[in-house]
Length: 208
Image (tube, rainbow, N blue to C red):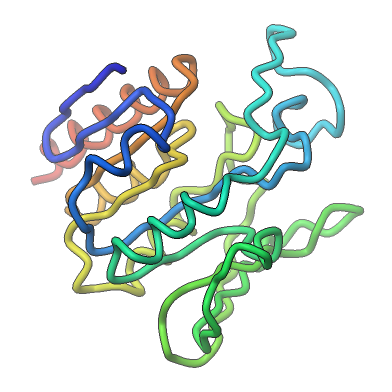
């Protein structure tokens, strides 16, 4: 296990199943778990092509186990889970406040993405182009959509992402001046996340 502290972000390079039992309860989990549809085989949704350096990391071969979802639901006040339609068998409770992310893409790709949230408020639609992202991870989200989701929880000071990937939730948390805990098992993406989160903090200091 490798642990990096970058300002108000604590980052773990490890399997989240090892780290989660050691953590205290957090205000909110904002995360994009693996969907189990093989996206690890391609960069930026190339549908089956391998990652840029022909490296197959196999992080998206299966969905996370039930105990991970149990921890998320029991140990956070609020949750937002991207692609939650892939996790209908993981015990997500009935909620009003789902978010529909309109990706503004068209073509043969999905028009949008469903995000489970713990909010007991009306369903919300957010428009944010996916194709504006210069990706360093096959399923990397735009910072703007993650910021919009975090902003739905104004009282959530500590944000956790147990599937951090390239660190977009961490970047959004830094931009919104939240405390962040991130976990990523692949060293390649962990290093990218560290760099991006450090850059976000540096940019925030320059603006301040």
